[in-house]
Amino acid sequence: MQVKSPFVLLEDSEDGWFTMGDLVDIYDNNTFYLQGRGDRIVKIGEKRVSLEEMEKSLKTCSNIKSCKVFPITVKRSSSDRTILACVVESNAQHKDRIERKMIVEEFKSCLLQYFTQTVVPKYWRFVQKMPLDPQGKISVEDLRKLFRKVNDDV
Image (cartoon, rainbow, N blue to C red; front, side, top):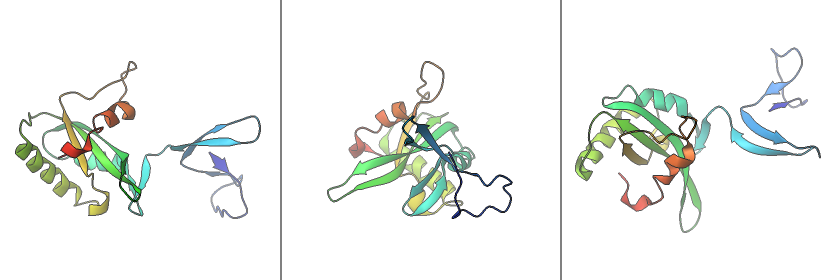
């Protein structure tokens, strides 16, 4: 989405249009629907975090072939809370819960070198292979299905 407004000051724009990181559907009746961010920057606990940077940092840890970090909403009694979840395609077999917890602590320690505790993923899943859609892309909806039951989290 691009906007032009007297409230947006752009020193390097020749035409006055500001390109935002949001994706929208524009309708004929001069309305639009906000689809979300296009740049994979999310706000967690009042802090902005780049999911791509977090994934890049995680890939420096051992035993990670690939990973995907994304926001999920957790229902609490008083309000909903958005937190990060991570699916890891790992080279190693993480068979028991204790071993998975140790690996997650290692990954969190790695991330804490670059990010605050607030934005580090709270929920983790390990897979042998990332779920792919028919076009061969990773679907966040398919990844979210791995977190339907959040009581047995690592």
